[in-house]
Image 1: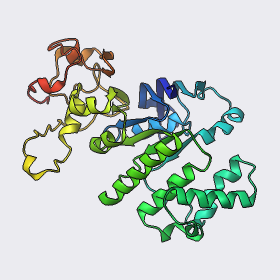
Image 2 (image 1 turned 90 degrees about the vertical axis):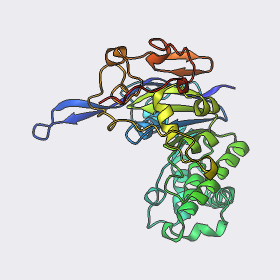
Image 3 (image 1 turned 60 degrees about the horizontal axis):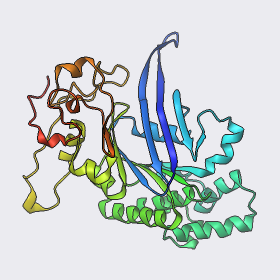
Image 4 (image 1 turned 135 degrees about the vertical axis):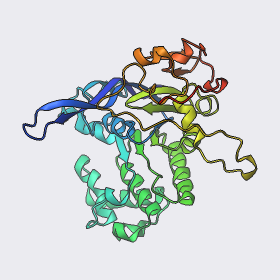
Length: 342
C-alpha cells in the first residue's frame, strides 16, 4: 500500500496584530513542525485537548488553510505549492466533515440543493445525472431518496451528519478529514455514525484522518493514532500500542480520563490530573512543551526540545526514553510519577 497523504515539517502560524497600528507583534503557533502519513484505505486518529491544533492541522492538510511552511503530498503530489488552477480539480479528491452539522448547511437550501452544489462546481454532470447521484448518495448513508426535498431543520443531528457525509462523498474523494464528526451527537447515535463510516471505508476504499478528543472512540476507528500537544505530535503509533502501552506522559494522562464502562472495574484506573492549563501557543515554553505539566519532569526537559525517538513502529518525543529512566521505547506506565510541577 502507498501513502495517500503525507505531511512533512508542516507549520501553520497565525499573526497577532496590535489593535492600533495593526502591526504583527507575534504569532500563534497552531501547528509547529508536524510529520504524519496515512496509508491508502487506513485511518489515522488525531487526538489532543482543545487548543492543541488538531482542527487547524486538518484544515491545512486539505488546503482550506495555507501552510506557513512545510509540505503536504496527496497521492505523491505536493499540494502546498500547487497553483489554484491545478489545485481546484484535486479538491474533489479530499473532503472534510465538520463537527456541527447544522452550521455546515445553508438553512434556506434543501438537502438536494446542498448535495448538488459540489457537483455543479466541479463536474459537467447534467441535471438528471445530478438527481440520480443525489439519490445514490442518500441511500449510501442509509437515508431515503425522498429526504432530498427537506430542509436541514427537519433532520436530527445524526441524520444531518449523515447528509454531511453524503455531501463529502459526492465527488468520490480518496481522503476524508473528519473533524470531531460525532462529538455533538448522543452516544447511541455516535455508534451508528461510526459504524456507517467504517462500512463506507470498506465499501469505497476511503482513507480517513479522524480528529477527536476521545481516545476510546479514536482507538475503535483507527489503525494508527497520533497524539497532539501544543501544535506538535508527541506520540504516534499503532492504535492498540498507543492505547495499551502509552510512551508519552501526556498520552497516559489522556487515557486515564477515559470513563470505565464496567462498574466492577471502577476504581482500578488511577486518574492522572495534569497541573494547570496548557500554555499559550503564542508563547510556548522552552525545552519540552509539556514540561510545565508533566509529572515526570527532569532538568533536561526545561531546556532541550526532545527529538523523536523511534520505537519499532511507533515514535515518541520525550526525554524519558533517552535520559533519566531511559525507557528506550517502553511504556511510561512503568514509572511512578514524581510530585506534580508547580
